[in-house]
Length: 492
Image 1 (cartoon, rainbow, N blue to C red):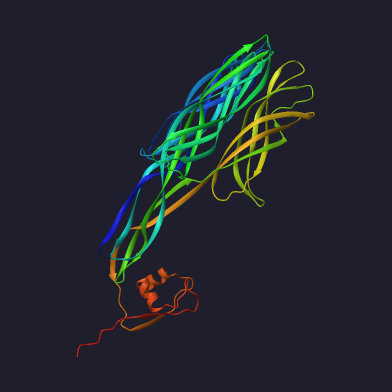
Image 2: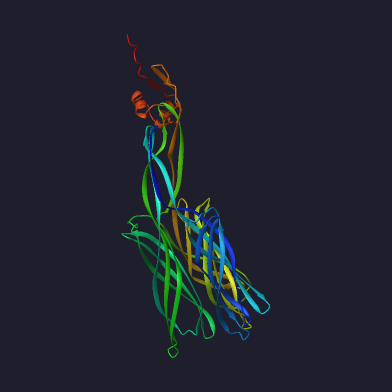
């Protein structure tokens, strides 16, 4: 028995691995009270190996504190960490790693203060895969046009700048930044990522901390031969470096701030390819054992961007009262996921920040605050969620209670998946005995299609239709199928 096969080869996303570890850093005894602590994480190297992905990363800790003289100071230190995301993996996989700081804890041991951050790592794996499939031969075949999404990985960098004027500042204590991709699309020969970076500054003005914020738009173009207009695309952007320069005019009481940001982008462009494959087959004369090959591919669909104003009663890490003065809101962040409820789908999560307050005794302290959000989304199917929170404010309307407000920006990216299953080999078995009667009447199974019926009868589909032109598919209960067989008269 002769068969014909072909082979498809291309890159595709093969899985995702997760891991957690802790990175820690020590600060000296000059720290009297911790006001705000921040950890910025960046991957240095990621290597796939049998059993998982080994990740080397770096954490940059920023600390704003009050010293023994009630002065507000800042300090920075770095630490390296390693972790391994366990799972079925091989050295041929290409990992793309995302790191996230889950939370920061502060502890004091003797004269030292230790900051520890829980590092959460997600490693998306891409690998070249093969898919062999039957295209023809001496069998009756059922053919289908299967969709394969082939992934093409891209990366690039760009620089953006922003300049604004504010009232006189004494010093910049801390800066944080977060980028959100609002749109990822392919244009002729390039992947275009557009979005916003939220740059937050914690500064000193007349000895007291205050918060400043800038929402800076960006557009990144990454050249790619595979980026044809209309191709599915996705991407993420991180802030690699931030350079701040301030020109102060004490006489005028003004300060001009210039910010230069280096953005790093990772993208994936998918090209749609069609595979004309045999998904089922049988022989008219013999039993056949079929072997199947399988492949799963995926691509990103067109994203949806939302902007919502959220508000709520904040949960506090320590109590406050009317004797406390609210100074600044810093280190704002948001985390969320898509959930299903009887009322429909929604993006649910928590918006958090550090609230700096000053007590009646003149001592400052940091209070962690958070409040939940729930935003309805009209979206079906599997999708991922990215969130950015900005413009957060806090007000003590009733003693001991903080009402918080913020602007929430969301990007929902759908995931389209294709599962391929096709015949890749066929082994001929025992001959099928042919009935010797000229006419047979068959009672088919209700719900069968033409292919299922023909395969069961071991007849070509066109012969079944020719003998039974009145048949309607799927088969209804009670229908009859007539099979005619040509008989040769014996020679006289």
